[in-house]
Image 1: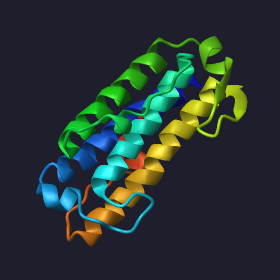
Image 2: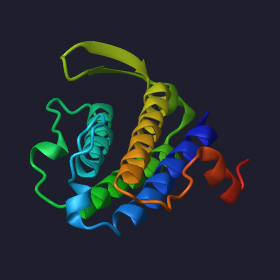
Image 3: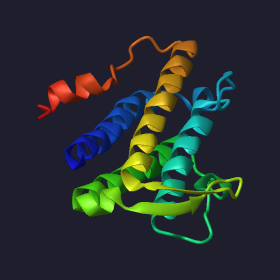
Amino acid sequence: MKELLLQYAAYNTWANQQLMAVMNTLPPEKLTAIIPSSFNSLHQTVLHLLDAESIWWQRLKLQERIDRPSDTFDGNTQEALQALLQQNTQWQQWVQDATERMLEHVFHYKNSKREQFKQPVYQMLLHLFNHGTYHRGQIVNMLRQLGVEKLPATDFIVWSRKNGSK
């Protein structure tokens, strides 16, 4: 299980870096342009990814008060992307240092509706990395709507071919 999670954590960071490279070439008005999707701009989608990864981190660390970074974030999209990559790196390091027992540990948390749940850490991690994939697909679609034609392939199989998966 740990090897798979290590790969997903590394893939998550790599895929975000691929799209970050594209978004960093766009003018600010395109990053904040209103585009129908789950979140109404590239900027808002990046903030959502940052919120999700941060919230799960806080839950794992058993913080009583959960803070959404976007509630106080006043930076630009590039700064949001940098914060997301820092959070990605934090997840990678945690998985690297985790034991199998830590990955199988059942932890308790409350969602944003204050409903209580418990589940193994590895399931939360699989959800977290899958969630990123879902929204990166939306980012690709948004970039296409903004006229970006050259987009990197961010599929897991592309990452694994480049990184010699085991």
